[in-house]
Image 1 (tube, rainbow, N blue to C red):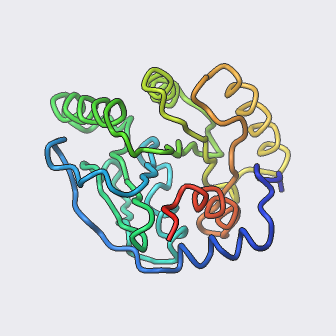
Image 2 (image 1 turned 180 degrees about the horizontal axis):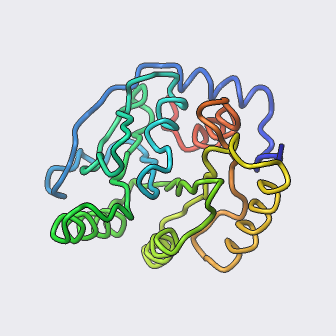
Image 3 (image 1 turned 180 degrees about the vertical axis):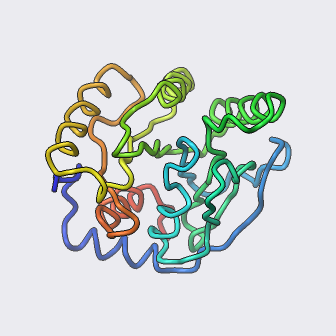
Length: 216
């Protein structure tokens, strides 16, 4: 398995595990920017194509089964959903993109809200851009990366469903993603490889995000 960036120490992994084991509560779903929570906590947002496994990853991160709803119907998340992790970190589940069955007006509204959120949220410290390990980076992902670069939002690619491809295919994908990230000024250089189903890379991602949490 490809080594995750950061190579967190045992102490860092334990600290992160304790943080993500604490209470995580739904705050609100936001369709319009005036309804955003006050920018008090550091925020980490999660974005990706519909059906990339975003809800499953959020549930795995927080060791819960129903924090974020999973569905066989792609595109179910149609708001910015905010979750308060122990009063130290806000997790933000963004609407999935690339779902053709959504109406053009809905897509336009989501894109406007998302773009304004990315540009104007002062406490947004990181965005996790989820990419399916079986499919690699697609045009919709590149559009999101361009938006993040323009908004100067620091982001890291998180490869999901890493238990699906063969090891050689996964290694090639990690190499390709790492090379592509060099061309994006707001991107962190290396992806984190995860599988919510097999708990691959969950600890590494927890440790990476715990560094952003509000200090007690």
